[in-house]
Length: 240
Length: 240
Image: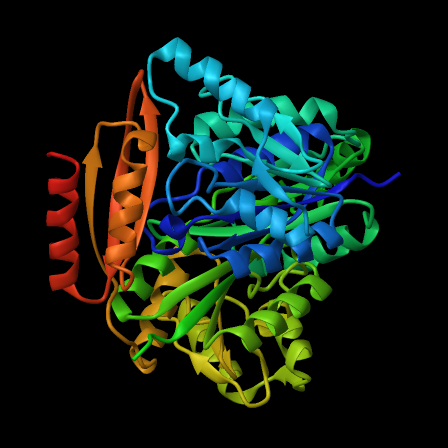
């Protein structure tokens, strides 16, 4: 049985312009590993309707799930919801269920539910709301696309709402070995190991820091016993 | 005059599996901003030949430049060079100029230029080598695709070799204002500002931390005078 596949779409000029580092990708990757969903691709596009539409369509077709982050706030540059609707040809407007959530929230906090904030209740027809326990304004799932906020605390809370609803597979297990030896001096052994353990993924990630050469060898797969065996072979083959 | 456009392709299972955070994207984004090249899209794909070929072709066609990172070392999982060659239908083999660099390097360091390391001299026909002052094994430029290492120190050194050869445009300038006010309470002013300054990009990036709501408003563009004017208007419109 193979695991479900997934892609992430990060919507954000602020990352492409080098202003901020994305924090959600790394978090999502870790959560999906634990949930047994394989993250196969990530795309980062700017706050541009055509770019979002093109990417969402391509990823939605190619993978079982698409997780998006960013662009669902109240300001003029928040165009994700409308772009997702456009990608699927779904009508979109302020929806009663989302408006009710916002009305209750702003009544509670004493802030005004003005026209800008009401934009956060724009939800495509046919979408299911994603709960936002942090700041109320909901995300949504349309088809296989899960649309979430860019603010890390909100993204994480929304993901916690969504993940339990998705069927996962086998968690991806991994073990790693830090070897203080140049990659090129163990490449033959690693290639032979990868051949013998074709069911596992064997990666070699070099580092050189302060004049010391080395590499982290990472063995990944669904079967812990096989990983144990590969790691034993690896230590033996490298004479460790 | 519009700036040249660019995309980045990060090749790396280790990022998609959540093991490491990519460091090169943020660095590249900052360098491109200074050089006047607009980074429009980033994709991260796994160490998979088909995935690399598909992404390289799409990005190479859509943008003026493509910068790749990762997968050009000596181990079995380093398949970037062959995948780039396949994407362009270019023959690839150990090339004399690259082999000569490696021979000199390994003679100097007393290490063996074995079969695994010789793979790093596999360069597609027609590609120009990218100098690697850190660890010698070169990157290469094929068409509009610049193929560089994943190790950050090497990626940065290769980028320093490549960037001066590329025609840049106007550096993207930006100013930002940290406003301790909820996004929804200034969305109308920001939308009006964005309308008045259609030549600038005006982004609003909310934060809430320790119970305090606020947002960073960032104004970007090529004309510093226009940005100054927009920032003055912004402060006035928000009553700051």
